[in-house]
Image 1 (cartoon, rainbow, N blue to C red):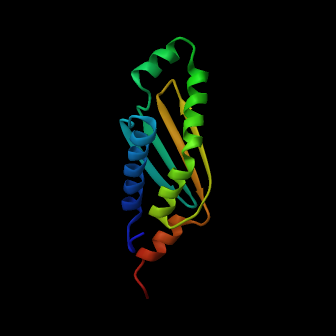
Image 2: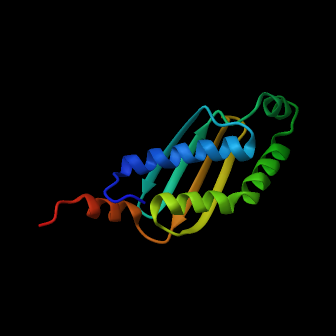
Length: 129
């Protein structure tokens, strides 16, 4: 990770990496992604994640099936996504959690890190006394 990157720059880099991951591993990217560093966590909110076919499946009571498939797909590729986060933050990923809302077409991914990244970034950018 380059030194002196701001919190906003890292959040933007994470968002870009997640879009690339979604395109490469899930077949298409979300319409919008926002990443937030909060203490020792990274919260990523993806909007517009469902394909047209998935939207039709949800209408015919296939929401639970879709959530199961999407969860399995993410779990199958989670090591790659964790590597990306580690590379961008310099922190080890302790755990990853996610959920998909078929109603709002959003996915939330939460990474728990091995240290408080927000504090570290604040200290790195503080002028030395």
